[in-house]
Image (cartoon, rainbow, N blue to C red; front, side, top):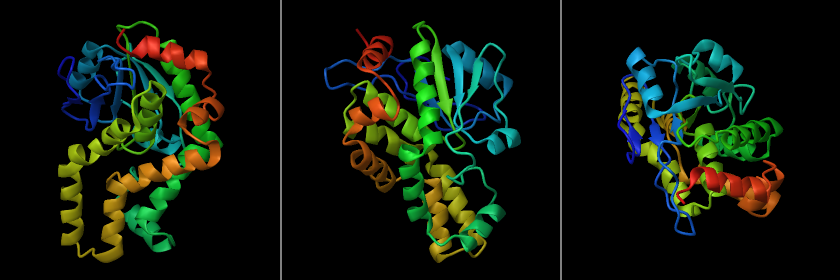
Length: 266
């Protein structure tokens, strides 16, 4: 992993590792580098990767995956990193961890296509009590990370949906404009492009076409439509992002000020 001021971090056996530093807020401050990292799975990290996390200053690992995902592919992290499991859903609704066979069976049984299913998942990340509880505890971890030399990492399986919303709530709380927050969210598609193309090519070679192919793509990518569905759910149920953070995630004005002190440049 490279050192500071580098958005995309390279790992031997991990993907979608990104530092959230450098984003500008409404009032001209910026998110500090090497404080909060969003990633995909940590299940395949080499010893070298694990040492890279330590060298980068990572002290906390927040895992948004379900119990089943964790049991199937536990995080490979060194002992000095503190692990916290905060499942956003009771099972992997995003389908990121499912095998091709499992996904094909589910697609046959499911009435909604992939895009509509994911829109529903994003709405549930805003409204479901378990999701709200996971993100509340995530912010409690962020607020407890008071040593500016320590970094916090959070992830799910692909590092795009549950992690994408975690990053959205965090950056929004700091006052980063929604346009920039959305750009960070959509950056996943550029980073995962080789994986996505490889998966779609394999599917086509297996004779998969039409709706099933579209659904595979919908579940491997992020979309403006997903992000907008989550924002629409926030506006419908809470009025706006600040009220969502305050009411659903129980962040007080004092909490927001503390987050800004901890994670923004002074």
